[in-house]
Length: 451
Image 1 (tube, rainbow, N blue to C red):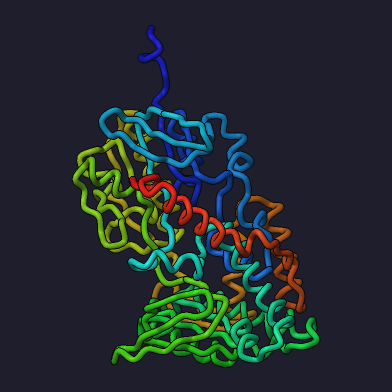
Image 2 (cartoon, rainbow, N blue to C red; image 1 turned 60 degrees about the horizontal axis):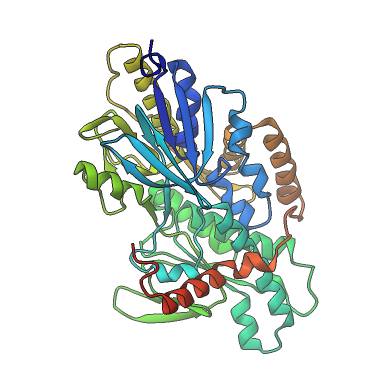
């Protein structure tokens, strides 16, 4: 029998996030070979990135190595690489890592490449307003936040010192609220007694959003309660304010009347929007599938790419029934498509269309304070915070990660300390230096970066 007839069905999974990882693990039941291609070497527990950015957790606690997670899954091969092309006709995936290019054929393809930060058409804001979608983002923000206090200590000019002690968080969704709350806790508890010439407790934290409420998806009552809690933490809430400009020393916002206000600040966190991986556009161009404003592909009810039943698009890249871009959707879709592939391989009938079971959503405001929306229930306070702790520990991958995370939470939430306050100069200037290098390269070779 020839190799082509005897080989097992080959599934390529793009992405090691929640969707890709859950699909790869579930495919054990399918009796197939799996190649997982990811641009990073780790699986990122993204909901806790803000705790890395504010010194509570280390990156290793929320980003275990993908190879370690899958080392006992002998049917899975893990490849490092940025996917640069998908050929739907040839059924191949092209990826690059450094100077090495790899072409991987597939019988079935699961595209779970996730999403990045959206600046709503102003990508130039990224240099001075990092998002929070990766370990690199979190480490850079940690460096910027902690260093801001150090530079404020050195600065003798009161106006310039005020710039260093002002922090602007753009976006009042869960990530923005959690970041603003933890910057407040950091300044008012952890760093309160560590400086001589400045009082960190006087740091100014501004939370800005173009919408009319905080945590709008949690309902009016919880939204109002969250706003009150944030104000008790000394956080200024600027709603119905659209960001129109960002530079090294300020962010400029505009209200509905067109009035603009400049907020002097050296530290800006962008938590305002997401956009799907550019692979969505690659797939849409070849398949004529529709993509929405966020770059997500409108998939069939079984999460497949229209016209290409062998290709599945899940998680933040998929647009289906207005499901939210949250981890639970990606996890459930990963399991669903893995089961669908298994049924096809075994010649069984297809499943019913994918249906998302909403297990609820949560967000922390500060220590001992959180909000939760579970079904028809809406509640906040200490009980919501404890529930938040339990659920997040349950979903952390690896026993070691759970133990160390709980220990660091105890240090931070019960005491004043933060286990991860180490920063490097490279973390702080890396993004601006890279941008400067690219700009200089463009001057020397204007066509070098045209795609």
